[in-house]
Length: 243
Image (cartoon, rainbow, N blue to C red; front, side, top):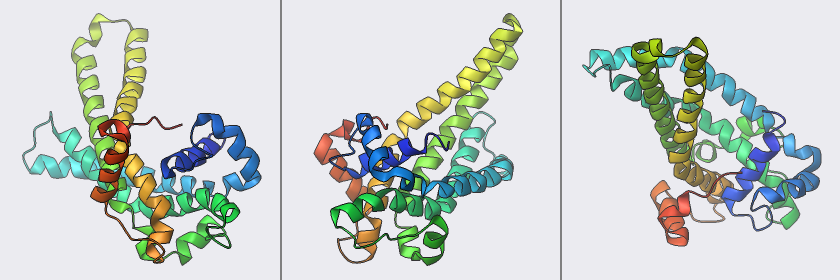
């Protein structure tokens, strides 16, 4: 994750619509421009990974039991439980994700004169000093993204495990291991592709959050940002591949 973090910073710039850092070919450029500062926001990734892992560990079982009590069938319950814990994880991850986004963008803001100095000195500084409005400005699209992703992931995985339990005896142990491993990876890939429009909306909103919450530009809602993306690029405008 640490080695790949510069690509995450580049993805943030791509989603924000930066004219210079606009595709994967800009990776060497952004690394050269940012130098070691490109890793300033990385602690936010570790913090959110720990937070979401802890929530997911017990949260999924909680919601699985909750929806069982509501009479949801075994077939659909993984999707309902996944969406529930995914939405909660998205909400709890929003503050650090917002701080990480500002720190990924502020280096170019300083260079381009959009801000006179860095907004946050560190992830900890941003988490403590950032306003609640700033830190939760883009909560809605992030919650939608994580809820949709986990809904699909747990649903696809439960169907795969069910199929392997009933049909797996027809295949060798190696084949079952292969199907179980790469089937789960494929489920994650499909889920990430389908929910990418919400990831793009989240990226756009987090990129403008500092300026919107300080009165420099007008604040926008999730539907407003999504509508702009559709107007600019059509329905497929929300599906430009991330770096």
